[in-house]
Amino acid sequence: MLAAYVVAVAVAAATAFLLPVTGADLIRFAVLAGCAVVYIEVTRRIERQREYWRGAVSPYLDTKSVWSFAAVLVLPPALASAMVVLTYAVAWWRIWPRERPVPLYRWAFSGATVLCGTQAAVAVLALGMHTYPGVPDPTVFAGLPELGVVAAAAVLRWAINAGLVMAAILISNPQANVTDLFKNFSEHLLEAGSMGLGLVAATLVLHNPAVLAGVVIALVAMHRGLLVHQYQRAARTDTKTGLATAGWWHELAEQALARARDRDGTVGVLILDLDHFKDVNDGHDEHGGHLVGDRVLAAVADALREETREQDVCGRWGGDELVVLIPDVGSRRNLLNVAERIRRRIRSVVVEVTGAAQDGQDAVEVKDLTASIGGSMFPVASVETVDDLLSMADVALYEAKRAGRNQTCLSPAPIPEQTTGADAVG
Image (cartoon, rainbow, N blue to C red):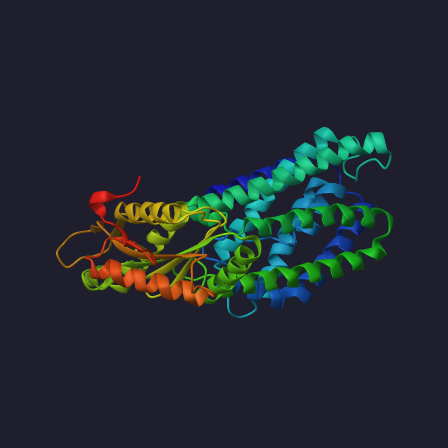
């Protein structure tokens, strides 16, 4: 973080005197700054909720970039840097007037990464646009290449900002992984939209500043839509595992079953239960007990995602019981192969637990995990609903446990189709 602060100040100082600041530039800066302040004020309550709902390892999505990117395009570098500082300072002051769950140093770090990206964008624009500072040439043949330069500057600005923030998250949170950072990557497309609106705002501030009110309105609407999306994702995602909640999984399973019924397709369901999971919690009280169990569940959930396809849906049914929906599974043999692949993968999961143990150990490993799996498949006689599939899979799970655990059992079958560690399916 200190390195980011130093580099941000250094590059901002280095570019500050590349172009002189005129009276017209100051007026445009005032117009863009006024719009930014109004936007921050109108959306501050939404932004506060959005920050609360943001995942712990999810990079911050900066919708203020409309105004700072517009400043990059039409203002000298010194004022473009000033716009970044202004928007972050006002946002800190207004969004968190009393409670400040985001430490100031983290907020300042985000601003510093944007400053670094801003100066990189300045370099791209200065080298590639003969109209800089300004907007692309309005003529088609001259304007298209310059529009490409603007896009390159926007991408570079975003990449530096996001890359530095992601690197800081990985350094400060060793438990995080790269896939966690990109879970909300689709939301970053909204930041691309913000950059596009920044180009619109830059054009308007040069030719028709009064119309900038429309950009503010559009941004507020986009901001509310982003918050709704976060609410939906939070309601559909189990916080401990990142898998689908039971309700959301059941809804998706109903949709998959309806499609299979209409198209003469197949659907497979697996219920997975970790064997002797209570022993994992009780056996590591000195390292956090249930916190250890949560980490084990999260690791198993990661293994589950890696052993299934994108169209498959993994969910947490409750406690240590997980479920997998497999549309278009094809055959019982395919379903059994998937279940066995998952079972074998769970046996390879190793979770390192650190902490002050009573026996003097600094770290222990939780390994040799096993799971019992029950499965069912549509179409089969007497199965009409998702609950029917779940009930049959639950019966099969009970059979796998009764037979000694660490097994897969599918139901129904004329002859029990059962496997153990000794005869795993390839």
